[in-house]
Amino acid sequence: MARLTVIDVEEQTRVPFLRGILTRSLQNAGLSFKDAYRLANEIRDDLGDASEVANVDLRTRVRAQLEAFGAEVASRYDVVDGTHETISVQSSDGEVEPYSRGRQRIDLMSSGLSPEDAARIVARVFRLLNEGGAAELETADLVALTCEMIGREIGEDAAERYMVWHRYLASDRP
Image (tube, rainbow, N blue to C red; front, side, top):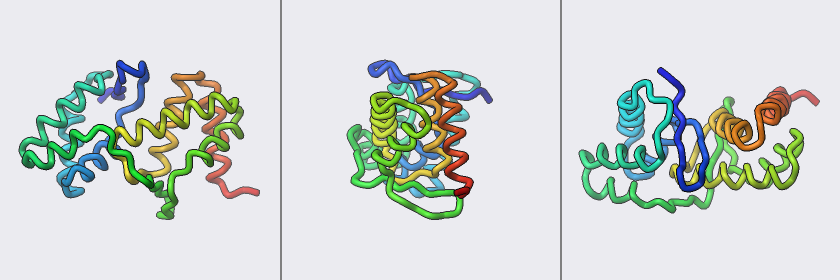
């Protein structure tokens, strides 16, 4: 199956389709984890080998599938500006911390991004997480989304520097 990219035509951005973020937004709409995960998998499978999908088309597909769960669930999914007071990030060892735009901006600058580029990337990542209804995600998903955004917005060299920095942070080396 090809890697799927979601295109925001308005913002002219491209981000990877992350099943975990869709699963979380479906849970926020009222589905159980089991139903949300199953539906996210079905939607990804329905897209087949497509390499791109517009965010509007993706939302339309999801909305149509949610009708089977009732109008109330579908209506909750329609809330576009579902920002959360706190987005939790779970590390591979199970530790959960609140997402911090400030900390992420510092990490990006530590990997060589200018303060302006770091702020722009963090703002876009935060907006995408909120649009997707993310209340919690894994560190690996956050890193993947951030790296993809850096690669598209700034370049692959900058994305690689971010990955090197992130691997260093995850290594617990002094």
